[in-house]
Length: 267
Image 1 (cartoon, rainbow, N blue to C red):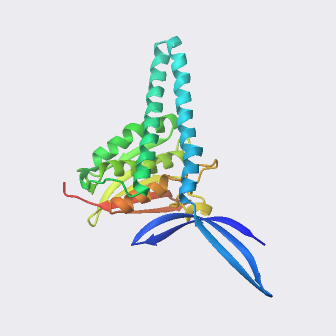
Image 2: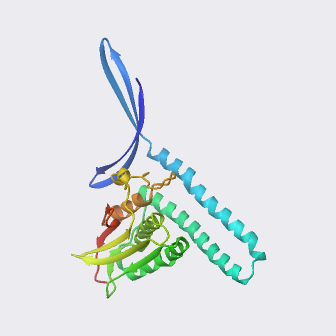
Image 3: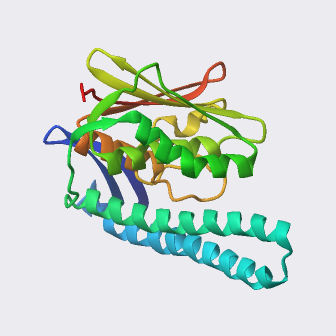
């Protein structure tokens, strides 16, 4: 009988990895007394991308804006202490909305090959500071301990600041979402054989069922249906634009460790 399914896979094309989403039909066909099957495959990446955008991006942004409106409504009645707390929350939500919009724009440019990249010596201290400034607030709100560790003497990478900050931000965001109150997320960097290795570690392992597809376009470890583009975008940015590599390990003993390897620079 006729069968239908969808398939997500990563393929190598021109020495670069690409993520594909395919729609697959199998139809039986009799020619005389012989049974054949006609297999039809259609690329539905654009369709799925648009669906994911409609289902999650606008939903997330509208939820954030609704929260903003609610906080603004109660602001006139707040006393001094409440005002400070509400002000901090407003700042966090506005930053999240801007971050979501910028990320969606960057992802679109990267997937269509229109991303402008400028590789130059980049101090990791500034990259870490940028990510800490935002996700430190997020970690505090979730009661998660967030540590950033650099060796003595600042490291420099030959990289693009915007894409490296975005890639590290996505890994930190995923690590925080996988953590609970009292958990610890550690971000560290070191230089190894002409490369800078940046690691993001949290104590919770990735389920076996999604490890093999963790870098695919719509893979997600969240119980609710997520966007599934965090680790996918990191691999896209780092390996296609930053001349680097992204790897991960996950176990009950060490938790989950994502590693970004990019060229080092003498500054």
